[in-house]
Image (cartoon, rainbow, N blue to C red; front, side, top):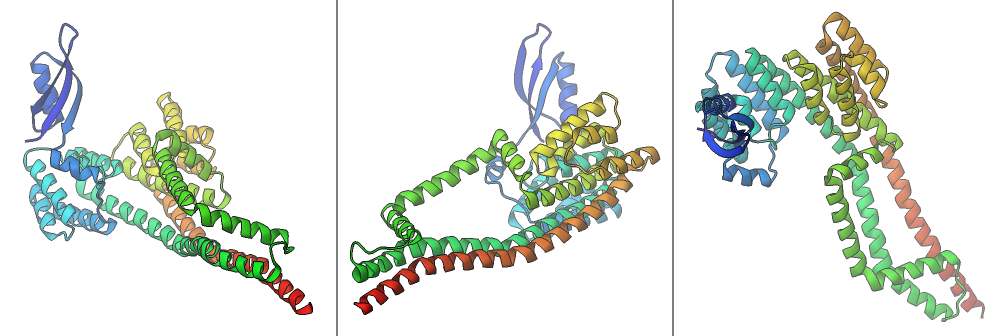
Length: 408
C-alpha cells in the first residue's frame, strides 16, 4: 500500500509530522481528521529505488508512450480492468525502464491508488498535462476518451520536435565542422605557414594587417590552447547551470524571443501547444484556472507562461479569458483572443482551439521547412567565406614574398 508523509496541526496549534499508509490522499486526510488533526501537507512518498531512477532523468520514447496510451484506451473501452490492462501493457513494452514504471503503476493501482497518482510518481515519463488529464478522466468517468486525446497530443508534440531537430541537424553539423576546422588550421597549419613566410621574407617582412592579425591569433591559440579549451568548457558548464535556474531560464527564454526568426518559431509552437493542451483539458472537465496553470507549464517558454499566469489572475477576478489574454499577452496574435471569444459565446472553446492548434502546427512545419532550406546555403556561404579569408590572408603574402625573392 502507498505511503504518504504529512504535516498536520493539532488543536493547540502545534505542527506534527509523520508517515502513514493509505489507499489515496483522501484516505489520509480522513484518517488525520479522525485523529482531530488538521492536515496541512499530504505528499505521496516515492520508493527509494524509484527516486534513484528519477534522479537519472530517464525518459521513455514518445513512440512507446503513444502506443501505450492508445492501447490502454482501447482496453479500457473494451471493459478490461485497469490493473489487468496495465499488467498486459507491461508485458508488451520493449523498453526495460518503461516496463519497470508500468509494473510500479500496476502495483499501486491494485492497492487502490488512482491511476493519475501512480503516473505522478514518474514526472520524467508522464508530464503534468498527462497526469492532470488522466485525473480529470477518472473523475468524469471518461478515461478512455481522454487517453485517445492524450495519444494524439503526444504524437503532435513528438512530430513537432522531430521536425525542428531535423531542420537543425545539418546547420549544427556544418557549424561544428567549421569550428573544429578553424581551431585545427590555427593550431597546426598556421604555425608552418608562418615559418614559410619568415624563411621567405625574414623577420622584417612587410605583411598585410589582416595576415599579421591571423598569425597573432594563431600564435596565441597555439600557446594557450589548453587554457582556452578549459575556459570554453567552464563557460558552457556555467551557462547551462545558470539557464537551469528559474531566473536564468526566464532570461534565456526572453533573449530567444528577441531573435527574429527564432521568435516566430517559438511563438507559433507556444500557440499550438497552448491551444491543443487547453482544449484537451477543457474537454476533460478541468476548470479554466487549473487548465491555464497546467497549460502554462506545458508551453515551454517562461515568458509566455508568465503572461498566462497574469491572464489567469484576471480570470480569477471575473474577466473573460479572451479579454485577459488580449490585455496581458504581447506574444499571442489577435486571432487567439478572437477565437477564444467565439468559443466562449458558443460554449465550444475546445473545438475552436483544436482548429487553432492544427493551423499553427501546420504553420510551424512550413516555417521549419523554409528555415531548413535557407540555413543550408547560408552555412555553406559562411564556411566558404571563412576558408576564403584564411586563404587570402596566407596565399597573397606568400605569392608577393616569392615574387620579391624572384625579382632579386
